[in-house]
Length: 265
Image 1 (cartoon, rainbow, N blue to C red):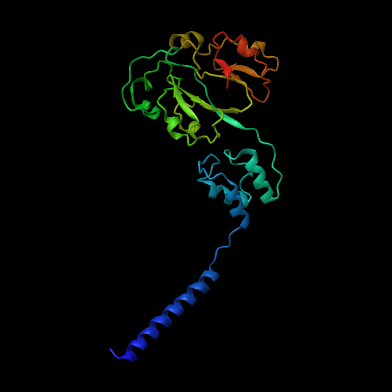
Image 2: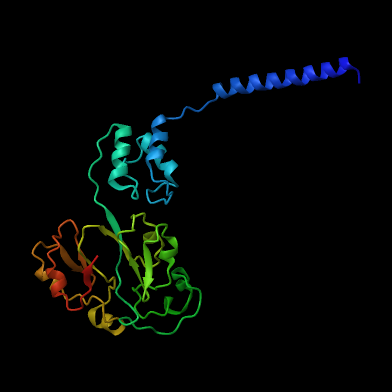
């Protein structure tokens, strides 16, 4: 090939490259998606755990929703009040004080307290119990199965199985809700971090039936209900329930409970 041909080819290639570059530059400006600076600032303020506890797929989804006014500035359970305050400054909204919540397992059926119908040696996963005899070896049909589905789901290492019952470390818990959603028996609920007492039982059976399978179960005697000065505790479906908005943490219900299942949360 002659020098002239090489120069012509180089000019053509260069010209095509220049045209493509100019075209892409113009297209980039013409079709550019405007990014809300607040959204980027909010994303930077969020903890970045992407736990889904806010109800969105991750922190970026929440940041977009907050910037568009579709989510509350305090929607991140992990960040708590401090992060809500930062986001409030970005959005120009005053952050309200938010009650810190933590998970609590409503079961006291340890190996010493709860009886078992048989010995199980299969897959160590609570959800699998739906496919085995009597939905698991534990005699109480409301009790914690103790195979750690909640432990696997927790992204903060805040819950562990101790003596066949899941126990929450309230200091590590971020109330993301993963354990609540995972538990097949719905034994985990949120309680205020400052709450002193909670009912560690979920059985709806009558007292005599409870005692057949667990020494630590609520028998629905209503002694706690009768002694509560603020009417914060009631017995419904044979199980005691505490209204945390009314509870003053006086401890009278815990002292009066004959089965001692109203315990420190």
